[in-house]
Every structure is written in structure tokens, then in C-alpha cells.
Amino acid sequence: MNDYYRITGYCEKEDFCFIMDCYGKFEKLWQFSSFLLQKGFTICEAGNESKFFDGNMERVEEKSDKIYLRAGARGLPEQATQTIAGVTYRAIKVDDRIYVPDRTKTMQRKRVWVDTRFRNL
Image (cartoon, rainbow, N blue to C red; front, side):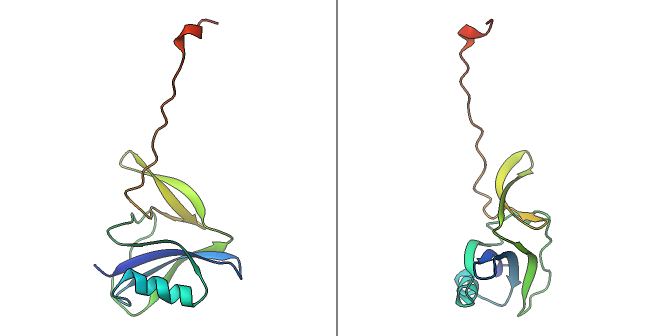
């Protein structure tokens, strides 16, 4: 599955966003991105199968020369979080579809300092 790619994009002219997959149509991710840029879309996230977690979208099983529209919605893609095996990641949500575009970007827990001197007030 070296040539399985997923891109989240946005069309400013028509104000809609999408998630598209392809498996076999392009040899490199930049070719898929370039194809969408030539059509006038903005690329929000792009990755190959080793970079993203699927979320609630199953992958296309068969290689083909098609591009698959996995999700579409009005406006920009939403930022979300997704917890997998106890780790919270930054995620992308379009309509009811969600996935983690970069498995190396986790949400860090913020440490909060509490001044215990004023606990009894």
C-alpha cells in the first residue's frame, strides 16, 4: 500500500471542504496534491498511509485509477481530537467523518501549577 494517499482540501470559490483518497492512481503524494491544486483546490492536509490513522473511514481495498470522495461539507474542515489507545491526537472532521492526518502530532497535556498555600481559604 505504498501508494495510498488521503488529502483534505477546501474550495474557496464554492465554500466546501472534502476528504479524498486514492490508491494506485498516482505514484507519489505530490502528484495527487498537484492534481487537486490544478483544479483550484487548497490542500489542508495530505499524507500517505504511514502518516495518518483512518478514524471512522475504512480504506479502499482495491487499487484503481479512481479518486474517492470520502466526505464533503460546506465551509472549512473542522479541527477535532481523536483518542486512540489512550493517546489524544489532533484530528480533522468533515461532515461525520473524522481521521488523524498526522499520527506524530499528539495533544500535550498542560501542566497546571497550583499554589497550595491558599488551599484553606
